[in-house]
Length: 328
Image (cartoon, rainbow, N blue to C red; front, side, top):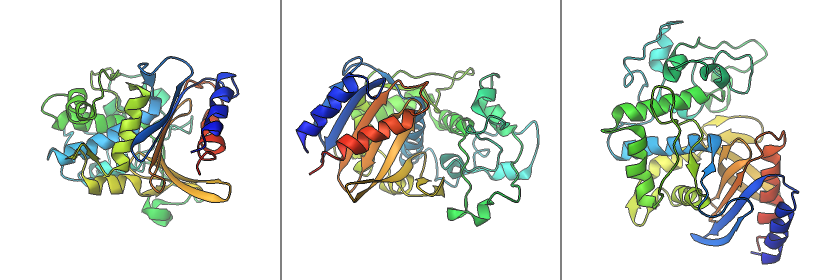
């Protein structure tokens, strides 16, 4: 890579061109090739916001590896039997699968991108039981101007839903011999050498799988590398390779440029006429963990641009205008 281009990037970030970017780390072929921090240092735990969701998806794969879950088609209410719907009872709720939650495509009316949605996460935060909040949502309808799941690409309709991922955390809590957080720390973080993760919890005490996990940049780099390497770390298969393949493949379409796997985003970036297919974790503020399989690269951008309208374009610009532009 062109070190001069990365040096220009560092200077641009330090002078405030990208507002509150806190760190950029880059690994290629499994080796760190760039590490820079602009606020805090290498030991600072970064609030990853919704990038946490991808970690929860990985932990579902770990639970399958451990024999605690069967597969992605297992129904959620067969595990969380005590969380039957108290409002809007509907037999279709019994058919919601882990895969529906992993792909943000359940039948329930839950859309964080729509302030009028019954399932918008801001409404969830007002009550105590966030999991019951999810199951008590009505089944969503499709007006004539919207594409139904049956007519959509991959047979699913995407609807960003934090409550669904919180529910996945409850699933992991239910099947774990200990707790969701202890399960994550023992079977994912400890093998990766990730220490002292800063977990948030929902009001009922379960680890918050939908956001807010505090990790160092190098920890995020390890998680990206684990997925890039098919779920293996130090010759140990932490996540089934088939699960990693499914997680990183397109499972549902978001728009003409973006698809979604199992709580991983997918998009192709074009730089100097070259296409770079990319899978990534994404969190509010512009927090990103980019995985580029063809280039064997992992790029971590941490950010505190939480109140900026262009939070995600700012991080994408760092990726395309500097990191990918520096590739030789």
